Image (cartoon, rainbow, N blue to C red; front, top):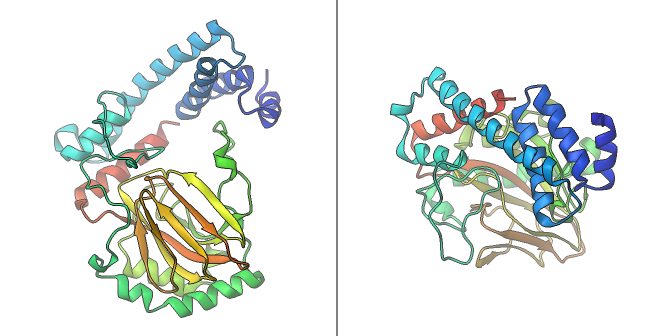
Length: 330
């Protein structure tokens, strides 16, 4: 089966076992180990779920995943050393995070109802925080005092200066799950000023105050191909974002509410917060959260991410170097 044929079949059924195997084989032959592992992993999950699958092929996928993991670990250690972070210099929390990432260590069990459950990367040793106390941030006032200027830029972008797109979009080199029903759904949409760590010049031109305020005043999280994130997040009238978990817990997600029609809120773990214009909210989005806008008008916030304040600069550097190594693995 060709990759194009597999894509057609997966567009009809995300859990098509043969198509997932074909995509895994395609990426593996090209040396694209992360993509291959994603498709093989989904194929194994399909087989374990009882959906139609070939048992021998599922065993082959599982073996391929083990081989990929061994190659991946060697690559990470070598790449980190080449980036100036040999193993003996790893921060203890970072070393533990990497051991868990590659399956050499297990996360300690938690009894709390809403633990941090990042979908991509768990960083251990951080205190459990749902909503952070934003008064600890010495940059908070510098951001909040620009609310009206940023809101005016946002209103112009909503009026047609920029194009909002669904917040959750498909990735061509990764298998797609149901994404909580939000894949391609314009009920929750965004306009990026910084996308996957890269400035979007045509949008920044219409929102220079937002861009300069965040990039100059805030200790933004910087991870290659992932952060910083800076975007306008739109939740349409009468719509909701289902419960879900974010990707990385070494950061907080921040909301600066710009257009707040009321009758809406963000529920994170056991707590709930209503948006109030100009009042910063910061939270660990790897804790289960959901949002709703029960008003008759759209809600808009400026969303960005910052490093958790407990982290040391060497941890910032090692986390960034790790993800640069992950991306270079193919």
